[in-house]
Length: 85
Image 1 (cartoon, rainbow, N blue to C red):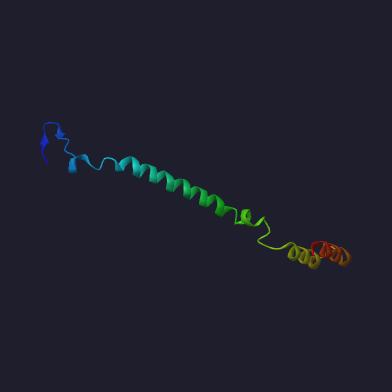
Image 2 (cartoon, rainbow, N blue to C red):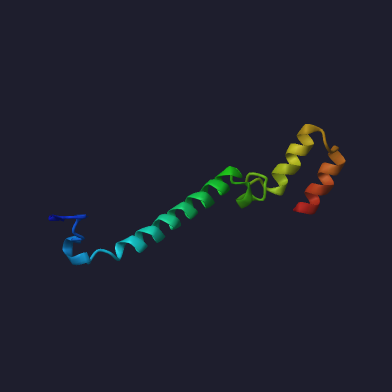
């Protein structure tokens, strides 16, 4: 390397053949940033967006829970269960 009066003489290693890597690496960086943001946003929802907000429970499971909690009577439970079957 030679240093002239004004400092570095502008020599580019390998004849400047790797200068195309700059834009490619910048695009790759932004793709990684965007993917990371999307992942974090989806993870913040706790996965409910995939399962309709019920954690993968069937309608019958939800019905049984409502009956167990006392939200519906036995008659209502039987009628709804018959409708679901």
